[in-house]
Amino acid sequence: MKKFLRGGAIILMTLAISIPAQAQTVEERLTALETSMANVELLSTQLFQLFSALQPDITAILNALATQQLEVATLQASMTAVQSDVSALQTGQTELQASQGTQDTDISELQTRLNGVSRTGNTLLLTNMNLQVVSGSGSTDGGVNGRGNIIIGYNEAIFPYLGADLPTSNKTGSHNLIVGKGSNYSSYGAIVSGLDNISSNPYGSLIGGNRNTANGDFVAVSGGLRNNAQNTYASVSGGQNNTASGIASSVSGGDSNIASSLASSVSGGLNNRARIQANASVSGGSGNIASGLNSSISGGLNNSASGSQSSLSGGNQNTASGFNSSVSGGSFNSATSTHSSVSGGNQNTASGFHSSVSGGDSNIASSFASSVSGGNNNRAMTQSFASVSGGRSNIASGIASSISGGESNTSTSSASSVSGGRDNTASGPQSSVSGGNTNTASGLTSSVSGGGLNSATNIQSTVSGGVSRSATGVNDWRAGSLFETQ
Image 1 (tube, rainbow, N blue to C red):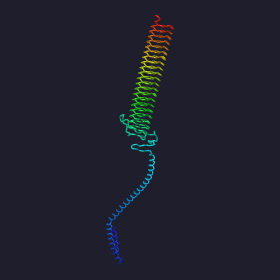
Image 2: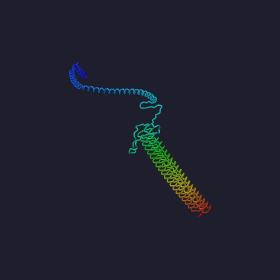
Image 3: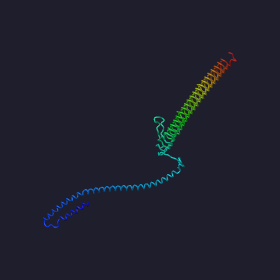
Image 4: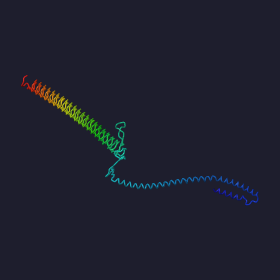
């Protein structure tokens, strides 16, 4: 810049000197003008050279100026950013001050809420308050989401004891109390404790035990191994491999027992079943099946109570299939008709209405209100109210007929009777034979009092003992060989 100013001053001084103050002639003036033009041209050349020499300095000055302008712009942008940051900090400070005020209020409220909470060593004590845990669904029985549970323990995955990775872990339930290891809980309102237990329905609880399952609403399993309560209100208490699958059914202990009908129950034993009809029950024993309405079995082996209100008390392979029928012990006994009963013995059958057999072996009471009291192979059959009291191979088949012991006796007519002996027959109405052998009373109200091979064949005929005596007339009487010869 200094070079440029100095060159301009020189040019102006040269022009001033080269022009005369006053030309006197035209020629002189032209000559002076030419000289001046030559001087001007020279000076222009010098001025151009001077500008060319100054051009790098001018370019450098312009570049420096542009750089300074960029730096100024950068500084202005930085200043604007700083101002923005300062403004944000001021706003943040204002918000922090407001938040601090809110936090102070929250801390004060939290201190009030935690009044009564204290810790001593490893114990957290809640005094005068309840502990409530919720899932956020709005109600206890709302949609489950895996939250709102109280879990005591490490909440491990269930062991796949069924093989092939089954059962799989499922912890999607809400509002449950979980105690133990490997529990599955997929519904709500349950208490699940023990090892590898599964609760899959509302309020289905398991208290202890291993591999137990609560698959019904409001069910409960208390201890044991591989027990299953799978219908509403069902319960299993201990034992193993037991199943309560009927509504309000229950199994109490034992092994492999099943209560599958409404309000049915099995109390212990092995492989017992209470099924089909409501309120059936089995109390112990093995292989027993109660399937009638309100039927019951009390122990024994392989017994069946299939009639309504039927009952079985122990024994082996007994059957009560009639309405209100009963069998009390023994083996292979059957009460198959209404109100029929068998009291012990072996292979006895009460198949008539209100019939009964009281012990013995292979006895049958098959008519209405008939009865057999012990003995072997006796029959009370055909007509109502027939009865046999002991003995062997006796048959009472008339209305209200009876046989009191003996062997192979027959009472076939109404109100007829045989009182012991062997091979005797009372075939007339109201006839009777009182012992002896091979005697026959076939007349109306006829009678034979002992002896052998005697017969009373007419109305009110009588033979009083002896051998081969016959009373054939009306009101005829034979006193026997002691008073009468052949």
